[in-house]
Amino acid sequence: MIAELIEGSLFREVTAILVVAAVVALVGMKLRQPLIVSFIAVGLLVGPSALGLAGTAEADPHLHLFAELGIALLLFLVGLKLDLGLVRTLGPVALMTGLGQVGFTSVFGFLICLALGMDWVTSLYIAVALTFSSTIIIVKLLSDKREVDSLHGRIALGFLIVQDIVVVIAMVVLSAIAAGQAAGIATSGTGGAAGEIAMVFVWGAVMVAASLAIIRWVATPLTRMLAGSPELLIAFAVAWATLFAAVGDYLGFSKELGGLLAGVTLASTPLRETLASRLSPLRDFLLLFFFVGLGAQLDLGLVMAQVPEALLLSAFVLVGNPLIVLAIMAALGYAKRTGFLAGLTVAQISEFSLIFVAMGVTLGHVGPEALGLTTFVGIVTIASSTYMILNSHRLWTVCEPWLGWFARRPARREDAAEPVGPDHDTIVFGMGRYGGGIARELVARGHRVLGVDFDPTVTKGRGGLDLIFGDASDPEFVAGLPLGPVRWVVLAVPPHAGDMQSDDPRLTLLEALRAVGYRGQAAVIIRGPDDAARMHVAGADLTLEPYPDAAVRAAERIAGARGAAALP
Image (cartoon, one colour):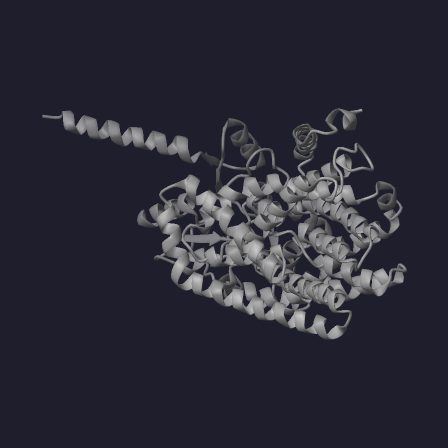
């Protein structure tokens, strides 16, 4: 019925798709799922196997164009975030963990697919697709939990960048194969194919050299010139991304790689964060049409027939990927808790996994059943890992007794920079602006303060304070602190936003302090009367609300200044 109403009108077709997308996304938001899960569901719903609102790329070329623009912008934003300096900063852990996870997942995923009766080409495609994790989803979840700057968050971002580089290499290989196939068909021989592949790499080298020249002499002056007009800046960024994508397509190494190079050329400019934040909504909107096109290629009956295979591969990703990350980080000397939290971030596949397999379908290397299987695995792993990451600390408490094998070596990487002496009377957890300000004021008043923060970079700039790296939500770390002479513990750890109370680090820390027999007093940052009541029940002696407390102090100073001014 709906398909008949929209037939013959692109406007009505797009309107119907957007309405379905809005409804499904609302349901996904209530279930606390990433937008990509909702978009995959929308693609399946509006495809020919369900509502029939969208057709294939041949039937709906306009929707296919939107999808290509969305992928080009996606790769452009990945290029903007391709911070190789972070990989260098983290040293071997990012490289070894990233490559180790990719190698483990691809090898064992390939063997599992072969055991399931797939041919070796399909097995290879699916195995490679299983290695990619979604940077977009992980950064969003870590940001929601305020763990981007934690040690496990930084390590996760490091090996996600390594994965992004592997994605680029895989797409280069696919582009070269596609060019070789086209040349082989045109020349009916292998000589022309080999020559065409060589030309792809030659033109690729030329475009990389041109990109480096743009980075060196053009990018920063150009973006500064455009920065005065936000509207023009966004229009320029979209034009820049599509221009590189079109050139990449013309030279034979795909729109995707062209879009990525466009982002890399602007990654060193001061405006890269502004560009990323402003383009993200447009990217998400256009990616909807990629998933619509994806759903148009899938037969729901064929997808549902692969449920056992999809569940087996999903279990492999959900369990195997975190365990290999945990094992590698334990071998490098990191605490098993840090390895566990970092490992959970790779317990899903990525939107790039679907793009990669979709390219294989386009090239004729694999059939639509491979894309359907990968899509099913994507839905299961992304949906499941979202809850795993959101409840990571609670999940750690459950799993910790079973992970003793990973603690065979001392966690030497996370030792404090200097031994903590038993001469502090106050410990401040969370050395941000508010916590750091409290610590400095207490020191000025003669207190002996020890500052603790989970951001390793904070503990490097001491500024006269005793600072150590540590995770306030790790009971083992709390138990190792010299709490005997401590009279006050200040929890300046930011409370979770919204209703995310399950992993509240303040509650975890208060419980850990009780467990180790701490008899001093505790002050806790809160965000309102209800939160204050909850913290007092949990054992807080004093609650601090930064903005109201600052307002009271400011009013007192203003009143005092006015009173002094009024004296004769």
